[in-house]
Image 1: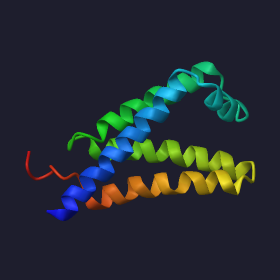
Image 2 (image 1 turned 180 degrees about the horizontal axis):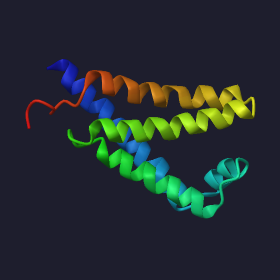
Image 3 (image 1 turned 90 degrees about the vertical axis):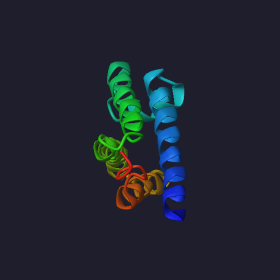
Image 4 (image 1 turned 90 degrees about the horizontal axis):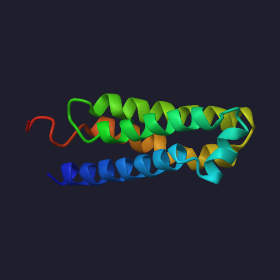
Length: 117
């Protein structure tokens, strides 16, 4: 029971952070356009990436789309990590690492309502 509560908190954290970052990308916040712009993303590509991030974060909430949502979220984070590695920006990689580990951890712990629905 305690594991399910902890996992629920972790899931809500991942969803909140994913939604927040997705919204920042979709609305082309200056820090997002600057970061993704150096990797060749124009405003449209940034909006698409933001939309996918928002959809992925919402998908995490539902047991039937839980794995796919986590997969999409982790893939987006991995993309950012790869871009940071191309730039030899280890600080950027270290900033993203906890987020991908969070997705992997909640996949391992599984959706708390998986067997209830």
